[in-house]
Length: 305
Image (cartoon, rainbow, N blue to C red; front, top):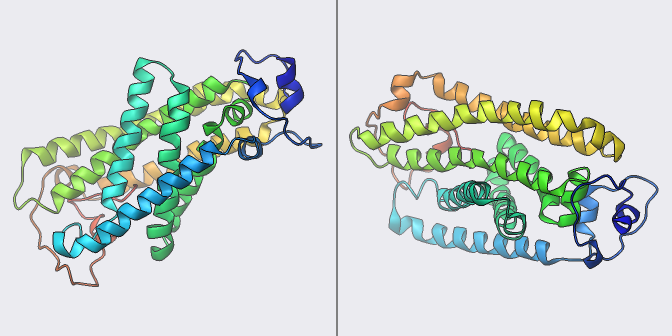
């Protein structure tokens, strides 16, 4: 472990023993190492290549959907981003759930799931956030990218975790359990825009969605109070106080957005949220239709994909 401390200027108290000999020596600087810098300049670009490759695949899928939406019709014609959004939400939620259940397989999370997720957030910024000037969604995506990008590299996770890479990877997985909300939200949106009368499936999905929102409101305060705050001394010892505060801020931002979305749902009352009410279907050629406005009605919910 002496090579580790010399490489990243972190004391030798860390319990995790990683194969640091595989990493080239990073440029020395007079300040403490940044998890973003060491992850980007670790000499191994496979992680970044996977992100770029997945980004290209997302953009291709989106372009194909844009070409097909006229033939497919409503509701895909008014919200073509739902395909990639649902794919991302289901993939990350299932991946996090399975890996946490069977054991902390950090290599799979780092090399497969995180590139799959970070590339989606980049793609959604390109095809949705910038064209629609959605500041709230842009903030959510940038926070997710900033907080999770360093974890994709062993040395980035080590520095971001103040010497405990496995803990940092675990925290990333647990945070992604909240993507179940997005997956259920998208399914509910499809039901709300395809059903012609109420069906039990709409109520079941809505109840599950509400439970995941409540889970979010419990999860993030729990992580901050019982898992992040107690480690402040370790972050101070390793000169990663800025990383610590960014980690706390990231959880608080997602928590605040979750509170905002729950408030919007409850604004119309639980009955309207749980019971489907038929409404007119907009024309595919109606340029004034904005699914974002319809998302705040009683039959839908705000977009968080």
